[in-house]
Image 1 (cartoon, rainbow, N blue to C red):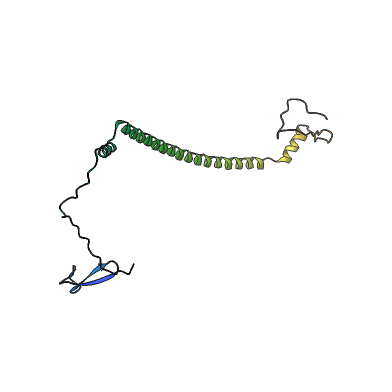
Image 2: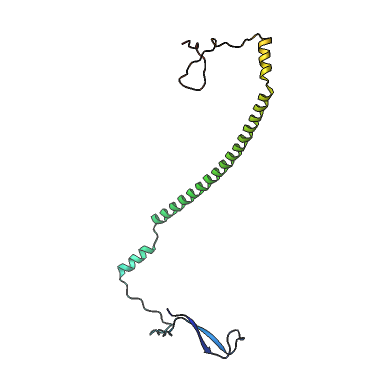
Length: 169
């Protein structure tokens, strides 16, 4: 397509009245197009072509909405609304549960920190040398000898509950 430009046309005054005696008209392309002239008068509508009765009946039937079609559209709309409402409810529940998980997680973190600090306080307050002195001097306990220590392998688990005697083998 050729470059569009402006065409100068003579007139007494342009629309704004402040640019002199000439106005500029926009022309699309590089040639002037000829206007198509209709042969029918503008006020007279065009006559439609004759339509057969079977085509007319089919068009009327297609434009009608029977009871089954209306019932189907109503059911589809109700189902769509039901699905949307349930989706929104599930999103709201999901948001509430996410907030609750975040709250419980924060509580767990603070409980773990408090538990660790209390454990460290208790462990620091215990003097093992004092415990050993009390056990040997006041309670008459003695240090275990190597022949009193029995070691054995356990097959499963990481702790022992003693329901029977410790095997000697």
